[in-house]
Length: 454
Image 1 (cartoon, rainbow, N blue to C red):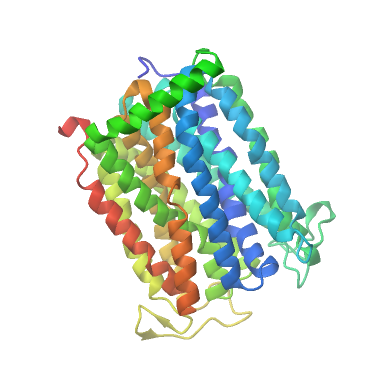
Image 2: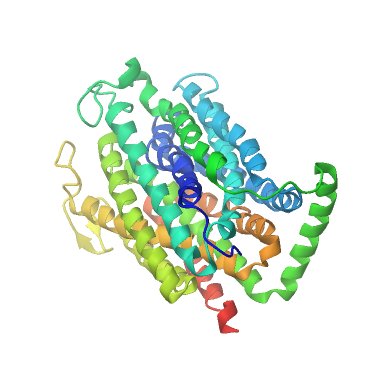
């Protein structure tokens, strides 16, 4: 661990990485491109939900397989920025490929799903290396605030990017106007959904701009072994690290818990926009405002969660967040167009009615605000728990295993949601399976003993 805090500009440069990658998850995976894909490229929303889930699962499996060995090698070679630069290439290229996913084009689905998967792999693998920089930037007692700062800036970056996309790029094809009632910039054609496709190149350019300070100001490890020697030593070291988990009860339990609850959280967020478009009939305006509200709640949640992390400990923050997620999932499952809380009849949403004018819409938005506020602290405190549980000299490897636990089974959540949705012909019932992920993860988490409790 670092003996003294890093310069302020280094801390902020590191924290900006979360903001740099956030449009991939906000614009592409949730609120703009994913609903566009399900509604305009896939044959129907159910097929789109299933195809998107399988693509997310394939990307997650690739990330899970790549991150641990790459982390082990990077621990030997040092120079984590070099690895960050290497994974920035597929991130940018994958985002740019989304522009070519024009509805009706022969390879639209391949560009959409392939670009999304490649960009996600680049972003998540790069994140494993930036996470491992944390101990060089803050003292142990301040890691929670550092992690919370990163998540908060990520949410702010996602909010700014989403607002820009909705105000100036993505337009309603019926009237050709964006959320603020103007024609899209750069002559983008709403009829061919160029604004929705443009969020890919926009996310690529956004990333290149915001990641630059990290390369310039954040500290890096010194050069270590040559690459060939590092490959052999790193893979051997990784094998020992995995075998050592048998003697690291608490780290192993935490990684299993993380695997389960992150699978549930990823699926819940991944289908938020698709659910709003399909179950409630939302268009680009409703989805855009909905996304802005969720992100704002996430900023508040990440900052409050980081403060709580340093005061009551990351384990309690994660447990509290999981409790909120379970409650949110229960309420979401209870919402139908003409009924809420399973049995209460209400007036269904009406076309051209006021924004979120019906009771099901307002309740769904309220639950989503709780979901957004809980998601940030859950992930930020999980990152802090990993730092405190892992051996300091194997931190990049530990973050590789952390990525493995968060991604190797990430296909399960989306796949189960897709299967249940098809079997029941109900998007809301598909969400019900995710409660099991949160409950099982919380049960395992309760058995973890932090170092100061042993």
